[in-house]
Length: 441
Image (cartoon, rainbow, N blue to C red; front, side):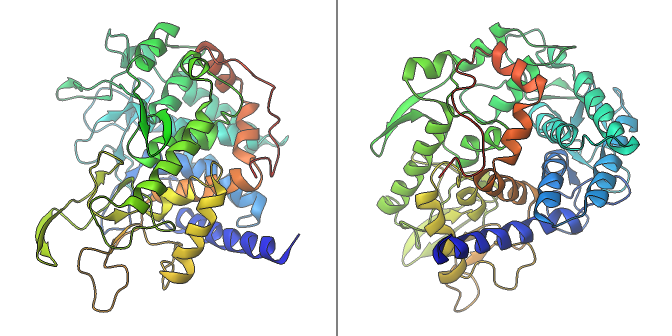
């Protein structure tokens, strides 16, 4: 291996280790819940907890955590969800096999009168199934991990979550019933639908997937024809668990590409948008991009260099149609590493060495920054998010690993529920592309 390659591997290893440490230190050891963000008295996120379950195998493989410690954490988490209060009560942990978006870190009960979330439940269950596939040694504890993960997945009532419609709803609240919104347009629900289609107990029909995918938008931006979704994270999250190289559903067969290639194109659109920088935000460029769902300096409207500028708080930012307020999220760049390493690696290097976005930081990169919004005096990156987020750290750890070894992809290729869900969604082409380490380069 060349010296340059060794330096890249060392940089990725360090970033991966630092990001993984979020799950080491921001988890309640009594129940396995992972805090959504590092603000005081903040609740847990079930999606972040799912990322933690998927990250523990990476921690073992990379020597960040012993297998015994990872088994203990995974088992604690799965036992909690299997045994937690489950029913229509307003202060339960879940209902109908799905779980509330945010949970109290200590008690594990619903926080903030939030919704029972279909997509966040999917991230939690995908993490549980990752643990099921990885921890398969012939021991009582690892057998129990498999049993509990299986039980959790089988309990999810996806048909109920349709609320008698063709597509899945976003969620449900005990006070008011189902949310008015349904999943439509290409987004992170790709994983949700595959998990729901693969269920042996409450499966969706192929008609449901067809109804969802019929709302896709095929667009042309910056020289690329691609399946549109504005925020970069929507092109990444399903790919954490599923290797879409070489397999196609009906939509992708018609377009002659696969979802992996689509995400590569979306990544290039992001970079080209930053180079073009139509709104003239500070800092954007060839190695400085990453517009996604993230924290921001707003809500605020101020004058910058004599021009009135509007800034947002936490928001699903996107390109090329916005919203875009100059806020960049490094995690969104790193999570595109498997798709386009030739443009992602230079951006990571720029963030590390030029912007020094890891300086005095416990968990790798700062969550978000905005070079246009005034920050501390002398800061080259302007405003910086004061908190870290589990939803940022998970994709960094997991997509670096898919780039380095394809671990998550190999594990989930062996998961019968994922395989069944893909087939039910009409995917073909299985076996064309071998899943092996280093195959993305």
